Image 1: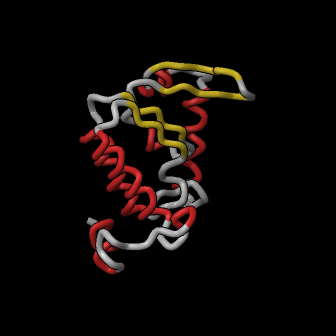
Image 2: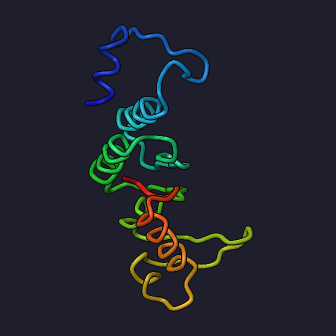
Length: 136
């Protein structure tokens, strides 16, 4: 809906997109890319920090769309926001350029000494203080 409103505000489907899409917000560009993946019926979706520079409302739209429309597809998500990967089938944690752990998020959360568990605890600590990692 946000993308539709943005397109209507401009010139509809004839809207100009300048080099790099700089005349569109980061969230609008992400929604355009997601729309393209939906129309192409992409079987594999790679998201590299897809929600890093967008507002919470657009983040929620992206996450919901990805979880519903790509539920039977392969989605590879590169993320720093922990909530982004909590619904994933598997999480791969890389530390110092090496694979540190790979398993279901729930299992990693329950594993003592897990990097993922540590990241999760750090995330919620910062989020509870309204820090940089907060999503609300």
